[in-house]
Length: 52
Image 1 (cartoon, one colour):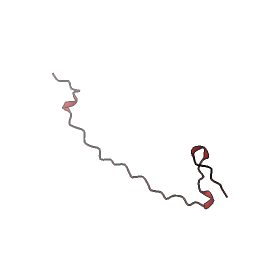
Image 2 (cartoon, one colour):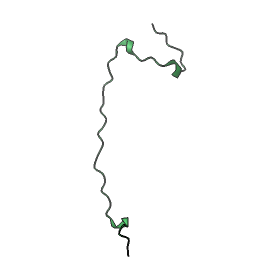
Image 3 (tube, rainbow, N blue to C red):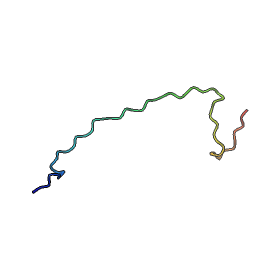
Image 4 (cartoon, rainbow, N blue to C red):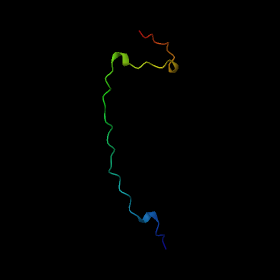
């Protein structure tokens, strides 16, 4: 007698049809010249930048 829980008796599961939506491309924010990010001197080996 075969086991009723035997998975070979079940038909294969259909492939999923859901597809994730692509990420939204957002533009870079507008920056003023004095808002440019300054690198952290602790995270770089370059000499510090002179800010005028």
